Length: 348
Ligand code: ACO
Image 1 (cartoon, rainbow, N blue to C red):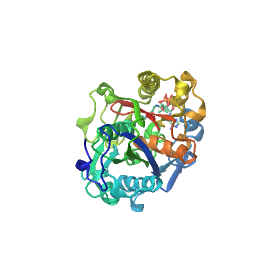
Image 2 (tube, rainbow, N blue to C red):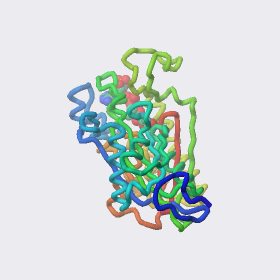
Image 3 (cartoon, rainbow, N blue to C red):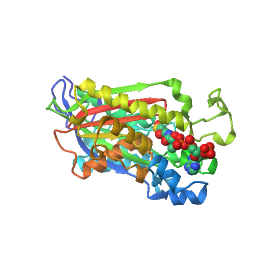
Image 4 (cartoon, rainbow, N blue to C red):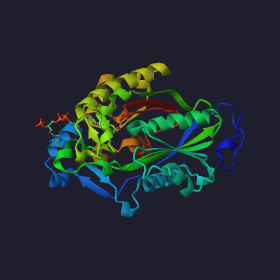
């Protein structure tokens, strides 16, 4: 039996060999600056009508570094908000996982900055890059480390400022209108009640699809079939139609397989918290399984696609309305660059 000494953190005590894991708190942070479709109309050839009809997005938030809205700054703010929501001190946390594909720099990691800012002591800290699936991957990883008995309290954070990699001229419009910045966090706590935690999960990848969504640093990073152009360096390059097709298919298969692993039917899950990539992608999955709208929250109209932050932003929003309760089942789902996709079905 582990007492969590490997993870650091204060107040370690003995737990069962396979403890349960409880979702104890949530929090978010979004940049102050809001960019509406009308704002975009002023800087590129686009229209509110095109963006709303194709994606469901009306506004998104974009970071300003001078306001402290770095990836680390957003992650720390979301972490503090989640800790406060859980009624916990940072010193109780012994594991920090930050899912991000836009760290402020290659090193130090965002998670080290968070662990230090919230005064964990010497908690384990790791960054995980699963693109838009990163937060769901992070939840599964942190949960399983806790279920194994090695850690007692974890912060799992999704934080990205993807807008630093967008081209806000007309040539980048098919991609730049989709994304926004933000961070979302959850606090996980080990519990003696072993029934709480993940009841089914999935994590998958397909590197063959990497050419559909990539950010090149140099000419060498372009796939052979992609034309090199200087202005594409450091900017998101996406084949929207290919990603759309992948996402619609993946969501359905993920829901079906995760339900089947857990032996549940669609109506037995109380909330489906999905990556907010495009309202049409979510609607397609919702209709296929007959999931009512109130069980699949959508906030893409206000935030756009915030990459790893998208799932925890949506979860925090419904949790704070009081709709998420102990005893319910919640399925988290995401897909993203890589390509990657994953699910995490929880018994609360
Ligand atoms: N405003 C106005 N017109 C536009 C815009 C814009 N912002 N962007 C593209 N258009 C034009 C195109 O130039 C094209 O014009 P043309 O027919 O004269 O050439 C026309 O609109 C249609 O373009 P399509 O690309 O065919 O539009 P589509 O209906 O496929 O929608 C979209 C594009 C919204 C990008 C869609 O493909 C999509 O949502 N894909 C999935 C993207 C996604 O989810 N990515 C995130 C993955 S997660 C991650 O890990 C980062």
